Length: 460
Ligand code: NAD
Ligand code: UGA
Image (tube, rainbow, N blue to C red; front, side, top):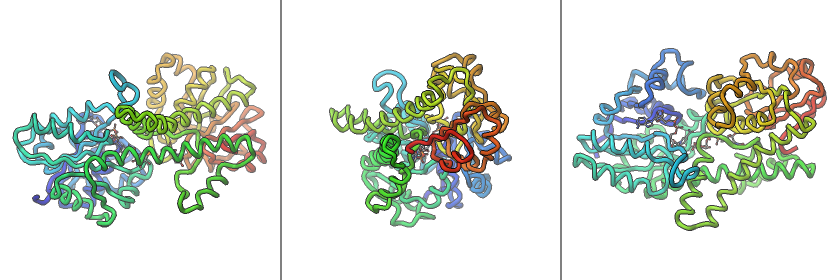
């Protein structure tokens, strides 16, 4: 296999953008082009003002500054980039199907198939095609069939190279990954991709497997991670009725090296574009092989997560004398976790929806999420008209203005800046009793109670 000179990535999203930026940063001799159909997104990636990149990720601006224009390019010329490339990463979205067979569970592979057909139609030289998107196990089989049957007689080698970065720490994760996983059948193609990563990732951290193990491992990794969050969240409810403290329980069990301390933070529920989608997909795959017990087992992780979000909203209503009608509740945070502007499947959306059903008045403050995004998340649910959403929900960039005469504050995202707020001042300007519902266990109960808040945290 000849040395890789040009890489193209289809999909300039939360994965394609950062991943390719780091590959380009660490391989200055390789030309990396990231293409997307979305012209606005590509224009934002090319913006001179690095504050206006389409995604917020700590450290991303530095990487872009170093590589963009040198050997990293963002473009809408998909066909040209496909034709020129030695390696093509497919990094498009694979959302849960919203129609037809598998609706609500299976992954929608229409964007993947479109990419495969386009690669086949355009390519006039041999290519390595890399699955970077998260895909159902055995998708490579379908890809190979499309590429071989609709192509121009050139050779395609398919590799699976799932991405394990987490948003908010994407650049750190890419710079020092626990592992890179490459699945494939052709040893030369595998070696070529290993060499790209080996520019900065130690060889022993680059794992190679067969295609199906690699595809399946991605779904399983997310399922195991989400399972830990649902497990600790289930215990948070038990802590609340027994006087145990879920942070202390997590601390105690996490010291067992077999359990480990990470991913044991109880919360209002996990969000993000992938945990729910990928577990639903795993459940769907298991059921399609008639493995009903396996499917039921993993489905429970999602059911527990839904319960946690509902429970948080219900607790707000019950504590505030069983009615929130007309009451002003300040939402701190809308993103699904700190240090990202991504709101996909954020718990905040579902908690808000529940409280809006009860006619609460919400004021939302998030340091990185735009007003448009917040309304679009609520409108997407289709539970009320956009007019009703804009009547009941206000978005602010000045949280202190929002706290005035508020009945309650609900913390939905663990942004560091919320810890530094002047909570004594906030207590003064809120209505009394002043309630704080901490869905992230961000603040200190003793301190908040000493100020005079009625303070409720998950799992305490
Ligand atoms: P995204 O929606 O942010 O980005 C996908 C991009 O692909 C969009 O900009 C879209 O316009 C583009 N696209 C779709 N079809 C196209 C086509 N035919 N030609 C050109 N562009 C096209 O999605 P994402 O969050 O980057 O996720 C991409 C994949 O990576 C998914 O499979 C996801 O499960 C997986 N993944 C995501 C994360 C994460 O943290 N977001 C982490 C690991 C894996
Ligand atoms: C997750 C995985 O961590 C990545 O390895 C994977 O690549 C990615 O999904 C993906 O496939 O998309 P991400 O969703 O970006 O990454 O963020 P996480 O840090 O995993 O957090 C997910 C959700 O779980 C967040 O809402 C977070 O607040 C919540 N969480 C996480 C908890 O409530 N408690 C924890 O202890 C950890």
